[in-house]
Length: 324
Ligand code: SF4
Image 1 (cartoon, rainbow, N blue to C red):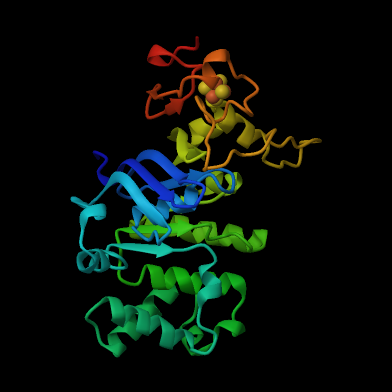
Image 2 (image 1 turned 90 degrees about the vertical axis):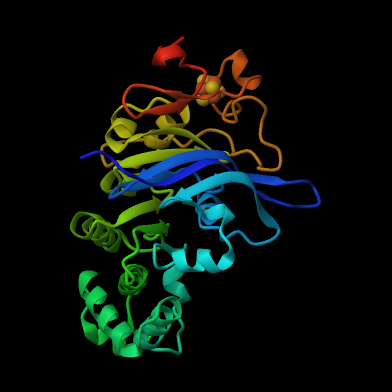
């Protein structure tokens, strides 16, 4: 079956104004997501992952602004839509699970009250219809309908996150964007949530963008993985290729820093991430890269198409993906 693109982002730039100048948090990102795919976005804290998805969904608030770019979703550019049309797409066609969202449940309302309110606000359905939908989606995420009568404090972290996922899929969106959905949960709960997210794609055809700093979570869940560094994507490929044959020096260091039982020593990535206020000239990773060459501090590497679907931005690779 031919792959069908659901989302295509071209040269997206999201900046934050400050008295010192613009913080270029996302600085020229292009990517695509196919229908039915789980697409991962990985990278250290501060690399621009969350700003990227906020930019895609046009959720940037001042002093942030979208400097330029295009975000094609189901045949329209989200960046040029008026607020009314954009609001129709949010929730109905694209839903978003923001970072820390399980803590945003209202403590003084039952799950039923807040879930049905959210649904009614974003669709033309009655309270009874909203309740029936939420009951069905709670079942999908593995929770009994009795959860509707509870308050958030009566639920564990994992249950709250399942409620959030049930609300996110309630209106059958074609794309769900989840930003760090398993962070701050214990590993057993993380594993069960990853299984749940995979099941949503496998059993219900949900397309998912999964944002996480946790490389082992990506290894368990995503089909295609992009690696972000300093506001840009530096490598994209199938998850298997990225983990078994990483090409970009930053990707290699990220993977080698994953804790494993058999490893005696875990090595982090040397140096500190640069500031979005003043990205280094040339390759933005050259100040930390163990393989940096003279050209790396002068010329920014372009994204190169390697074999298959692999893309890499690094001067180590030249025409046709050959090493220099
Ligand atoms: Fe390292 Fe140079 Fe490649 Fe950048 S372009 S990752 S500095 S080798």
